[in-house]
Image (cartoon, rainbow, N blue to C red; front, side, top):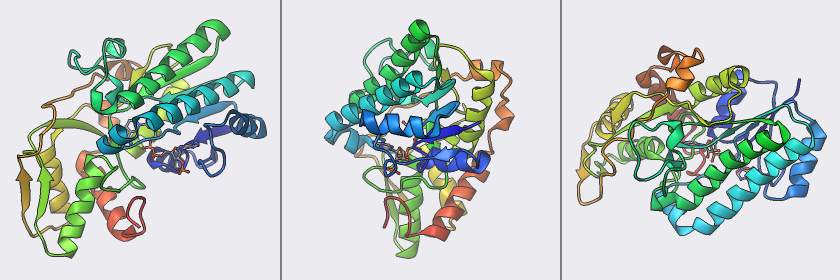
Amino acid sequence: MTVLVTGGTGLVGHALQKVLPNAVYLSSKDYDLRNYDECLSMIRKYMPEHVFHLAAKVGGVKANSDFAAEFYYDNILINTNVLNASYNNNVEKVVSLLSTCVYPNKVNYPLTEDQIHNGEPHQSNFAYAYAKRMLDVQSRSYRKQYGCNFITAVPNNLFGENDNFDLENSHVIPAIIRKIHEANVNNKNVVLWGDGSPTREFTYSLDLANILLFILEKYDGDHPINVGGTQQHSIKEVANTIAEIMEFKNEIIWDSSYPSGQYKKPSDNSNLLSLGWKNESYTNFYDALKNTCKWFIINYPNLRGVS
Ligand code: NDP
């Protein structure tokens, strides 16, 4: 059986390589999926039974805001092309990724899958969010008209080895790891935005890789399914833990003149648990952070977004 992974060189793709080494892992250098002919050539070359569709234009708040049109255009094209080429070549199942940041700005917590389309996403990433929401719409409409088994999963904040450590473009954990490491090397204090009090849920990329295999086998539903761990960690706790792991001797200064962000964003993973996934199957947060920091130190500065 051939399993093809788009976005196979990213954070999630690298993690999947560890648990599913025999799949075909592709990047934008192999095929630019914004181009339908290239996408079709990819599917026709490998004729996969299953596709994990991970490829996306992903970025931080600033990039999402500065390049909103590109985030919309690239993601809409990539998703439209991958699903349509998969349908046209009888791919048995496609598993695609959305993100909890596609949920509406005004929403009832915890985030439940039935609320995804109930209002505008946050304005900071509306273009990415709407393009991702259309991935759900396209998957469901192909299921309805053509009977395709296309499913979508919704991870929350991901982190792990092979993340993007670009300070302009990265997510909270890789940004803190890099800042603390560089402050350590230069014997400086580190300044972080806000007061560190908001809490977030984080999922280790290796856990997501295992969940992707799990839902490939267990989930054939038409609606998106939340797949992230639901333990809450404050940003301050994350920073202090990273500082401890990296043996940071100087001070972390919280600059409250910057916004702290929304206080809480809990999600509901009960649909995943009802399939048999266990909350205990998520890697202990400290261990996952330790693996990531260790990997970062070994590979610095030859890392995505650094060199
Ligand atoms: P990365 O940014 O780490 O990797 C993106 C991947 O997509 C790379 O392999 C990249 O190839 C590929 N890609 C980008 N543009 C194109 C293109 N035009 N044609 C073909 N391939 C392309 O992403 P992640 O691994 O972090 O994310 C994987 C999925 O998970 C995405 O769908 C994302 O939206 C979703 N997600 C991520 C979260 C996170 O915190 N990271 C949270 C929730 C959801 P190349 O290496 O050549 O650039």
